[in-house]
Amino acid sequence: MAKIEELKKLSTQVRRDIVRMVHAVNSGHPGGSLGCVEYFVALYGEVMKHNPQNFTMDGKNEDLFFLSNGHISPVYYSVLAHSGYFPVKELNTFRKINTRLQGHPTTHDGLPGVRIASGSLGQGMSVAIGAALTKKLNGDNHTVYSLHGDGELQEGQIWEATLYAAANKVDNYIATVDYNGRQIDGDVDKILSLGNLKAKFEAFGWTVLENHEGNNLESVITSFNTAKTYLGKGKPIMVIMKTEMGQGVDYMMGTHKWHGSAPNDEQLKKALDQLPVTLGDY
Amino acid sequence: MKKYTFTEKKDTRSGFGAGLSELGKINPDVVALCADLTGSLKMDAFQKEHPERFFQVGIAEANMMGIAAGLTIGGKIPFTGTFANFSTGRVYDQIRQSIAYSEKNVKICASHAGLTLGEDGATHQILEDIGLMKMLPHMVVVNPCDYNQTKAATLAIAKHEGPVYLRFGRPAVPNFTETNGTFEIGKAVMLNEGTDVTIIATGHLVWKAIEAGEKLAGKGISAEIINIHTIKPLDNEAILKSVRKTRCVVTAEEHQMNGGLGDSVAQLLSRHLPTPQEFVAVNDSFGESGTPDELMTKYGLDSINIVQAVELVMKRK
Image 1 (cartoon, rainbow over the protein chains, first blue to last red):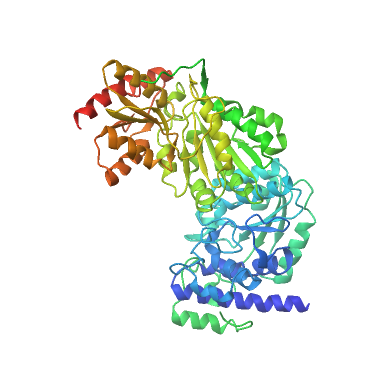
Image 2: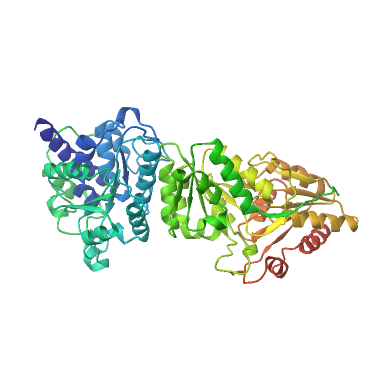
């Protein structure tokens, strides 16, 4: 359990990084980032076999991750940095001129860890499927992961990809939906309801797992481990992961208002008071 | 006027199919994707010869572009195939973000471009694709003129690292370039040296330019004819060298006047060598149903239109 405790400390530090990053440039997306901390910490700290010190675009003989909802770049960047892909102090450049840490992730500036640009929603599942197909062609028995927002599922391309992955038995692939129920304009149910999401993916032919505790690190790791037992069985795998937008900062929880807004100085202090320094600030 | 002959008419899409089949044999990293138009794109041979490297994605072009981007991660060289309309306008954002901005080595291969798609009409006759694609940073845009050149271009783009848009068409047109000729991306092909006017043509308009050159020779006008098979990067040196000599230019393309080859040439000349220019292109209009020949006549893309444009531009020197 020593490692779990370390990963929990990392989770708290990542949350500090997120609110400090968006505060520093008065822009960015803290809500979804805070909600997906456990997902990223589990994936990069425990689940994936990956090579942060020797990043290659081709990523042969390692697991791959694709972030489809690119606006939650703060959590992605923080976890990549703490995993060793690039110096943690570079988080200080987020969204600033000449940075590799663009508002939305990109390969364009050579940031290690990023293999596709994302931001315009709905594209990451197709990309992940392509990467999974190449792994099969290459005889590379590693897994491809992707993360999607629930609001993002309103994009039609997602359903093209969902159909394709099942029809073509893309079974070296574990997708996850960040099911926080909120998007910019309000509750997903009010904007454009997804209906019974589990039934939808099952009807498309996927293996679907649900995790109702997406902000519980042990639970997220258990979900990944369960999902892995379905690899290679002829179906793509979807984890519907219930999270809380803004998790860890009380005033950012229970609302969609912090989807894409940065805290001011006073709000930052209030947030950091709830998130003690664990590994040191960048 | 140099004499050009051909033994048969062939469709450029078949040149693509032949090139792709050959690539399949010589390059194990080449993979192909198609959105339910395998027969129309002439991708059947590759599909039959390399079923494990062929991905039928169904009528889902956005997904096809994303999958193609992903396939590059791990070293594959994906060739996507569908009509030009569905290869560009329908999937512009996918190409922009997942392929162009992400610097993925995807070859976007687009058939049935322009009016010569014919009877299906304007919904399928894209005339904006060159403009859309050339605006994307670092996208290479190739529009070969006949079967042999399309086959050669297909082989050549596999060796280029980075995204490429390869545009070709449906109808059988004179196949006059060299069999198994070389194809150098970004290198203009001088078809006829002349002194009075430079005609710069791309795609199906190249043969029309040759026909126009013969008509002009009969009128005592010496036309220099350049085949620009690569619209981006444009062969600036070849164009400037020719125009310095002739001091007037006609561009010819099966595309909107806005955003096409003519625009690229005008931009080059306005910066380096301001020169009278006339444009043979579709003038701010959609197409319609009809035979390819009827459409090329109605929309002013025939050899006679090039002749008229030459006579007009020479008066402006």
